[in-house]
Image (cartoon, rainbow, N blue to C red; front, top):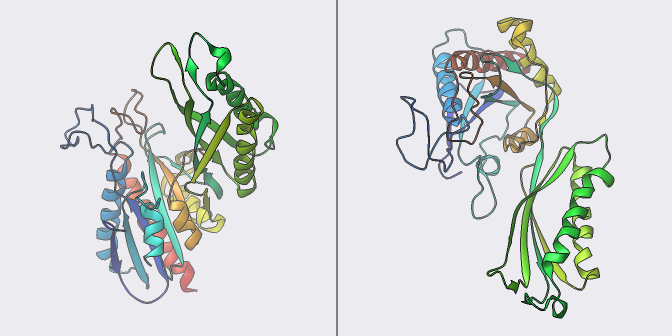
Amino acid sequence: AKTGVVGYLGEGRPIIGIRADMDALPILEATDADYASQNPGAMHACGHDAHTAMLLGVAKLLAEMPDRPAGQIRFLFQPSEEASDEENKSGGIRMVEEGALDELDAVIALHVGSDMPACKVMIDGGPITAAEDSFFITLTGTGGHGAYPHQTVDPTFILPQVLNAINGIRARRMDPTKAGTISIGTIHAGTATNIIPAQIEISGTIRTFDEETRALAKAELEKMCEIARTMGGDYTLRIKSGYPSTYNDPAVANLIKETATEMLGEEGLLTPEAGMGAEDFSYMAQKAPGAMFMLGAKFDEMNRPHHTPVFDISEDALPIGTAMLAEVTCRLLKQHAK
């Protein structure tokens, strides 16, 4: 995976993997933390530095454990979770393709949440993040002088009809019992006030949890774009498939829940909620039975969302996450040794 790192501890079977993503985001940090980024325009605005720190802590704990269960542990330090390379592949799928997860009996991971109470855990089996697909639409007409719209096929007139139809997919074409959304992110057109543009560029995202709804959303998007042709224009549609939905193996998720309950008590568990965000741990969880849990890390009363210049987390959560990963790994080693 180019800049990925895999650490090995122990040998033989079973083999348990622990993953931490490492990459930052192209954001100018606006915190006064003593650990703030020293590289302008690059910021750990999603907690991946915390994930890396915790996995290093797990490696130290397990390496020094005198009665560590038999088997091999793989420490998967993964690059490029936030973005894909020139072949549209993220670090997660790269590590899978390059064999970092071969022969694993299970794989686990965590993700900090800056909006969740610090030191609390959220875990559930089944889908926990959405599949993510991007789409790019070009609506075309003929364009012309703004004073003579009747001589044109105006794509700005076609645009709202297409947008309304796309926004209706969720309401009228998707099963209301299944989660999914389609959102428009960008619209670009025109160069001057008196020129009707010849084309309009639109882009957006599709988020779904199951493959049936995912396929339906893509097919319906194509149908709605065809409105442009009924109005005398034309269109092109390109869909860029992104990460699949992350599916937590119920057995692994239950083991994490039991561990959290014993370590933190019932009050240390949060009510599970699936999120519409995407996560490339999904590829690893397809390769081996796996589960990711959320670790609350709210820093203060200020709103510090992920992917913003003011993102920050409570370091109080780090020992909890480290201990959780280490203990779950030991339990998985024992479980799969049977």
